[in-house]
Structures are given as C-alpha cells and as structure tokens.
Amino acid sequence: MRIPVGPLLILLLAAGAAAAWWYATRPTPVEVRVAQVERGRVEEIVANTRAGTVKACRRARLAPGIGGQMAELKVHEGDRVEAGQLLLALWNRDLVAQLELAEREAEASAASARATCLNAEQAAREAARQEKLQQRRMASEEAVDRAQTAAAAGRADCEAANAKARVAAARVGVAQAELERTRLTAPFAGVVAEVSGELNEYVTPSPPGIPTPPAVDLIDDSCFYISAPIDEVDAARVRLGFAARVTLDAYAGREFAGVVRRIAPYVLDQEKQARTVEVEVVIADPPDDPPLLAGYSADVEIVTAAADDTLSIPTAAIRPGFDDVPSSVLVLPPDGVLASRDIETGLGNWERTEVVSGLKAGERVVLSLDRDGVEAGAPAVADDGQGKD
Image (cartoon, rainbow, N blue to C red; front, side, top):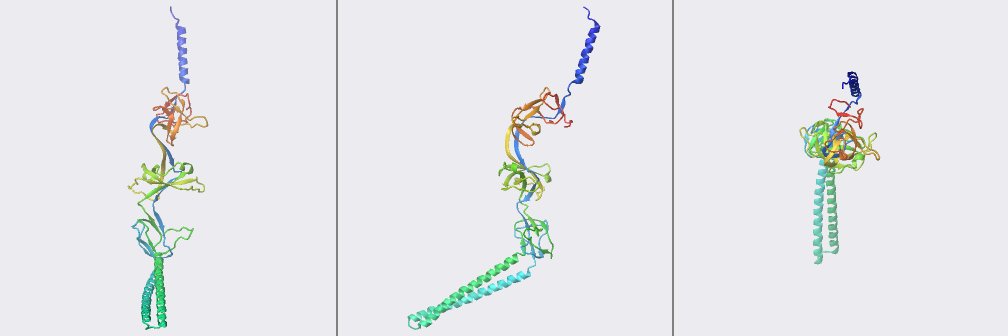
C-alpha cells in the first residue's frame, strides 16, 4: 500500500514545530551555588561585639606623691628597668636637710636617754646601800626614804628619756617617708612606654577626679591578655577555662589559641552602646616575631560547645523555621530539580550548623537562596563560580 507523501510531510512538519516550540518555551535552569553535606566538627561560638584590646598584665601610670621640680630623670621612653630602680627625683634638698636634722636629734635623744638611765641605775644602787645600812642600824629611815624615792624617780626619768628617743626615731621615719615621696621608683620590671616632662619642669600628681598625664608610664611586657566585650546575652554561656581563638590585625592570617581567665562580675552600661560583659582571654603561646604590644586590637571567638564527627552544612543554606514550621533547605538532587527538605539542627555558628536529621552526607544544599527563580520544583544547575547572587 502506498502512503501519500503529502500528509506524511505535514505530520513531520507539525512534529518539528511542536519540538521547536517546546525547546523555545522550556524553563531555563537557574544557576545556584551549592555545598555538600559534610561530616566533621561543629562548634558553638561566642564572639566579641566590638574590637578587643591587648593589655599588659601589669601597667602603672606613675607620678610622684607630691608636686615639685624635676631634678633627676633617670629613664627615657623605651628603656628597660628593674623593680626598685629609680626613675626620677624631684628637688628635695630641704627634705634631705630635715632628714639629717631628725637623725641628729634622734642620736642626741638616744644619748640623753642612756645618760638618764645610768643616773637611774646609780640611784637604784644607792637605795640598795641605804637599805643594807638600815638593817645594821647605821642609816636613818629618812635617808633610806630619800634614796628609794630618788631611785624611783630615776627609773621614771629613764622611761621618759627612752620614750623621747623613740619619738625622735619616729621623726626620722617621717622625714624618710617625706623624702621618698620625691623619688619615683619602678614597682616592677618592665619597659618605659612614655615619659611626660623634662628636667627642671614642675611635676604635679593628679588631683582626685582630674586625670593628668603620668610622669612615667611603665608596662610589664612579659605578660599580656586580651580584654574583649561580649554581649550580655552571650556572656551567660561563657565559663572560666573555655577554649578561645584570638586573631589580631597586626598578625594577619594567624590564629592563636587561648583560654578564658576572667569574666567580669558586672555588666557595662555605656551610653549609645550595647550592654556588654568584659571577658579576659590569655594566649597560650604568645607570638614573639614580632612580640605582642599593649594596645593592639584583637578579636576573640570563645567555644562554648562542640560536636565531633557530625553532619553539618553552611549556615547560609538554612531557611529558619518559626512556631511549628521546621527549618528547611533546598536540595539539588541528580535530576536537577530543586526540592525542599525539612531538617533538624543542633549546634551552630555563623559559618556551619549541625544537622541532626533530614540530610545525608554527600547531598548538595543550595546557598544562593536569594536568586530569582530559586524555589522548590525549579530546574537548576550548580554554579560554576561565575554567577552572581
């Protein structure tokens, strides 16, 4: 039987037109960034809300106890000093003279006390002789009474003279203390950070409530810690001894292990700033190439909980749930059609979140949730890295 050519040709043309129409109107797969579900460690982290600061364990902003003219300046900025070393001295010749006068007066008082006590001993011996003579009926009762009274008075004079000698010795201590107030010494070993003032300039201590530049700023550069403000909400999860990671702008690309050594027992309430708790972190192995400097800015991440060998995904892939709606993700299966998947999450931070259920290792979750057309049921292909969000 012969098939007519005309109808067959029409049928073929219609099929081709239908195929061309389907090809032209088919949905274009959207490009999406994806990440695989991986197994590993996930940490719950608390971080500082504002930049932390590297601080020396000991730092003293020193000034003499009294005002005066600077007569000696023994150190300069950058000098290393030992504990007890003289840093500066004020003009103090008057106090030196007063100390010498007090010492001489103390010597005189001590000598006078010795002389008075010797006389008292002589009077005591005389009273004893008179008593023996009375026993032999060779001394009158009046003579014995006079001798005993003289001995008692001598003892009292001796005690008074010794008391005056102690008063004079105390005056020496007062004069020494006054002199020490003109001498500024290092309370600990360290490096001089700043010196305010020059020779012959007048130095004054800070009045109460009015801060003035210290004469010498001394830093103990053998020990440092990081002081970082933690939001009051997060601070409740931090405990002493928790592990921490420290990064510093001065050491780009490096991370240092630390431990929490102190949590302030109060909340800072500063105007126009969030309420925070100061947390101190000590770096376990401080860098020495170059060494730490007080004042460096630092960021702190404190690990409050961790889970090892658990499934996790980037936190950016999660669509948070609310009320009775669970959290979910978009999955890109091998057939290229996006599918929504409810998941249960565990520990997490701003980078990765633990997946308790709902996903398997190796599955691909979508990261670019804000791209147009990214929704369940849409065809998609993995972005090769050139697409834009």
